[in-house]
Length: 149
Image (cartoon, rainbow, N blue to C red; front, side):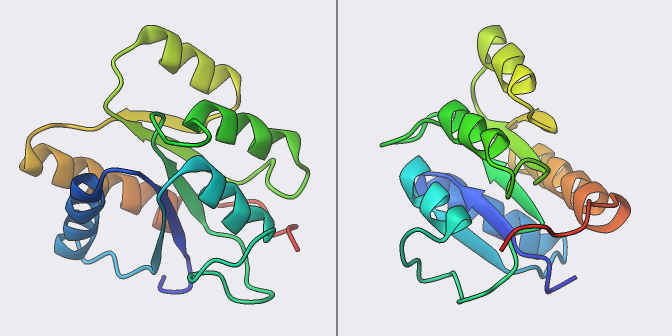
């Protein structure tokens, strides 16, 4: 499972730390690459700019955990661009956000999000959510063949 990279697109350092702690506590040992804003995420995914976590010729991540409220380029626009590009159209994107706006939920799904998860405030609930997320998306889910270059 270690070769299945997770791209975490999150601008809040506390949420990044919390997510990484939850992965570690759940024994999810996957490499996690953090993109701190939407522009950095797109640069990483499309290889358009250097990113410290991106190796030349590396495979795309197994999943993208995408916050919605991001600087530079918002999460919904990131999702829109991922779905518009043949290289990332089938990449599993899980929206992981604190937004409780029904419009965000509806737009996320209409743009092709695979899942929409509201971040629980309580650490134990967050831990459970991350554990279930990892189990499903990294172990049980059968992803389409890698077509990205």
